[in-house]
Image (cartoon, rainbow, N blue to C red):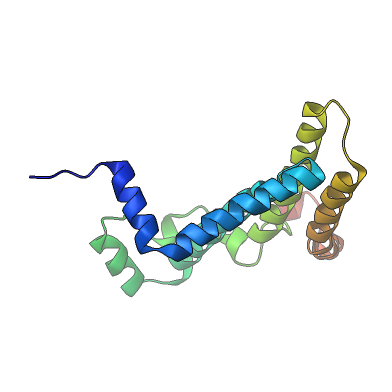
Length: 172
């Protein structure tokens, strides 16, 4: 009986799915161009941010389903062996975070702030690794990315902070 190795199976998968091969080639080309022109792989940064936001999105949908949906969702989850807690079992601040917000902040506000912090951290880490010799265009791309994330985040949070009562009694 013939056996197929993992590398042979991967080659067969690439042959059977040419779109995956094209996408992989395009991604590596974009990464190389970004590295060559800017000195930094922005393709990798966008991919990592995409994975971060995707995980946050999946977590948010699971939490919303746990809080709002019952019945069918629980049955399907139990079929796959996933134990979904009842909404009553979740801590009240966690339920508020996904509903009207907790202390003026909603889940997505926190995720957006973390996204901005991740990009700022990535820039300073890159700057440290390159001994402060950063191409001005590369710095400009980082600043533009931070501004884009900030423009979608800061005005909302600013308005919520203005509307929030920060007295000791309201925080309990």
